[in-house]
Image 1 (cartoon, one colour):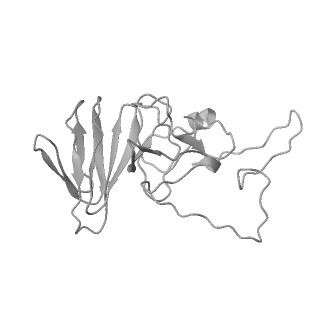
Image 2 (image 1 turned 180 degrees about the vertical axis):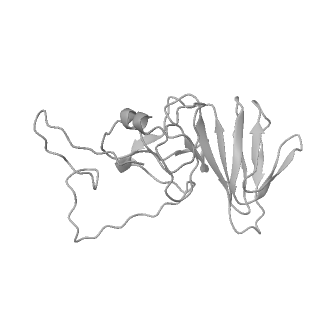
Image 3 (image 1 turned 60 degrees about the vertical axis):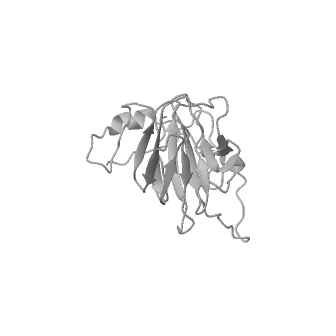
Length: 210
């Protein structure tokens, strides 16, 4: 909350609780409230907090992303060609969206869903288990995002940037390479400048007009 954010590149899923508190400053035809945005921002500096996820239900192909809020958590489920995977049984309603790939599902009641990118489905509470399957002739995996009420509130998956990990089931991110000839910043957050200010001093800050 009270932090600016923007989609820059890559794949993104935004899941949030019901609210109407989005404040915009520009780059949109929607209502903009620059003064309110300037007043509410924290202006704090430091490295980001990253939700790197963790394998769930004993399967690295199911990645759980749990924030410290009760409203929701998200799982990214990946099924590779020639494989099948059973979605976890849930006691709460859930929705899932097909992110990429194709496949189908079956359950003990004989219900079948055809998976295609962009399709979304609602799962009622105590829904019979669904099994995803991808034909071995497919060239890529089937990947879905499943969201529901937070069932692991006491096990959030947030971590500092320097402690984050990557697992085989999550989106692959390129590993940055450093130039040996470039001196390292003494600050643990690379690129963050430390300001040595005298007591009572202020930092001039001018907000550009949008």
